[in-house]
Amino acid sequence: MVKLSAACVFFAFAASVGAAPASPSVSAAESEATVAFASDDPNYTLWNENSTNTPEAIRGSLGTTVIGPQNVPIDLENPNLLAPPTTDAGTIGNAKWPMGLSHNRLQTGGWARQQNEAVMSMATEMAGVNMRLEVGAIRELHWHKTDEWAYILKGSVQVSAIDQNGANYLGTVSAGDLWYFPAGIPHSLQATADDPDGSEFLLVFDDGAFSEDATFLLTDWLAHTPKEVIAKNFQTDISAFDHIPAEQLYIFPGVAPSDDAQAPVSPQGTVPQPYTFKMSQLPATQLSGGTVKVVDSRTFPVSVNTAVAEVTVEPGAMRELHWHPTQDEWDYFIGGNARITLFGSTGNARTFDYQPGDVGYIPASYGHYVENTGNTTLHFLEIFKTNIYQDISLSQWLALTPPALVKAHLNISDELIASLSRSKQVVVGPVASSS
Image (tube, rainbow, N blue to C red):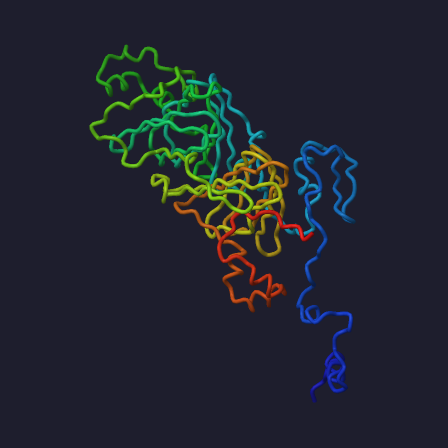
């Protein structure tokens, strides 16, 4: 004999007498839901670095005050760590590194500081260097085992290089422009006099373990090669090398190059693909909440292993919810304030705040957004170890999925589903006021 549970008996009896099994106070949608509905409790950023109140580890009824030692400036810059949104859960690794916390290598004529996986263990695919050169200062002739991608933050830089065939290149790039040197290509960097302050730029390398202190330098090599071998190589007397440096120069002062400088004529000609790209002259795509420029190997052919999106987000706007299918994202924040929530699957999510000079890192396929939390334009770079830039928009995905399937998942209205954009929004503006 089959035994019926009390619940089965109740529902069978209710059906036989025509009674509704659900309570009259519960909506049809709620009675059919398999899990509770998401909370409407607000999860806004609670303060910023300009706030005058002492930040506390409190959000609504959760948490309490800090009564032990407190680094208030750090807490002011990171409200979503001290008082995280209630939607945060589980464990996500650290996805923020301020370049201001990096050890700075000071040289006569400039400096350099770096971020790699030694300081941000999540960042396994890419590493970055922030470098400054005074007018005329030279980052000496060198090469790397990794590709080098660069973005000029201020000023201008003249770059020189040759390829494996002996073809050479000389070019100048300014603020907002790029250069790219494939692994093993020898090159140099020199700040021009176009800006009285010289230049500052960002370098990105396609290996999270990269160290700027481990590059192959011309002076370092010759300082560790017997002089008689050097003389034999150049078919001259050893006295010709009486004044070569006894150790590496790395960054050192020099005379600013002229604007009309020309590379020596090579029998092999110039390189087939330029090592620089005038991204500053590329028109930005205007969006409802900001702008975007994308440069990858389709527009900058030599950049076969690095792609970039330069994004601006206006106050109240956001880089839409999206993910990148197979590429980790290395971010650099140039201006404004942002927050990003990383969704790492299996209920893991964590929110971080970013200021100018910060590095962010988002592993491949992690869902995320970038929200402007300040009162000025947010300006940042999304950089990827890939030849072609790719992303997937949440809104576009839902718009191009059968509506009934979307409604079954989210219980949203037909009107909302019909309004979803079938094209990527990239940066969306603030929600229009209903008043």
